[in-house]
Picture 1 (tube, one colour):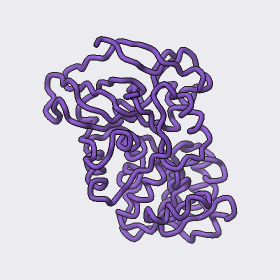
Picture 2 (spheres, helix red, strand yellow; picture 1 turned 120 degrees about the vertical axis):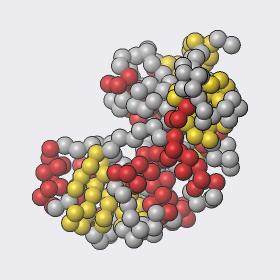
Picture 3 (cartoon, rainbow, N blue to C red; picture 1 turned 90 degrees about the vertical axis):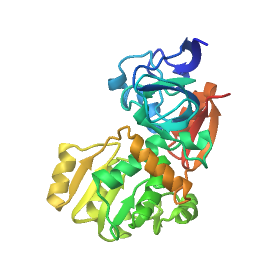
Length: 318
């Protein structure tokens, strides 16, 4: 087969611009692998990019194919690949923020941007992990250097990144507080959260005490202000979707706290570490709904509500 199915868009806009097309199947270059995609995760950056935000500035003008989360099987290896073999089940977040074109039946990328899929997960479950898992992992271990006994607040703890950040932070020995709607509280407590705050009824700044770290996965003016108020002197706010502005930096400096923007990057080694936690039962991934590849637009509509519990995934095999 020289062609494959993919989801493409010829213009920026709503979910309706996404369509199924037949395109040339990619070929791996030296140090790259060709992966037959079984499932592709859907993330907020996908629909934002589709509309003209997100990573559209990196991808350039349409046409392009969205998606960065991949789980599948290595079908071909390029010269110089030593970490993977044909037939290996792998997962990864290749190329981010450049185009990975994961909403497709095949992708190519450097072999070290993938890792062996956790043996106890299906491809659908594994496809939910890379971008969200690496975001949570890199924030906590690299950007924040979270230490045992520290207190951390995670805004949007019930989302794709949030529910993994709760589990990673708990595994690192932190006291974990999350914000979420009431319906998600029992679930998050079961994942290891020590406290869960209903942001719809409770002012976060009155319910937490002083914190070492706040992970803001929402980025609204409200959550950013709350985050600065609940940090102890010298504490750190990691602002994920919003980044930092001169105004935010000034507020943080006046309050005696630090603020740092964040963008995830491919990391096959970290995915291998995450796979160990998954296989040992210390971390689990939540998939709310699975859509066939051809229904990518419906997945985007669901994602844009901002009310998902865990992740959405495209099944590329149907």
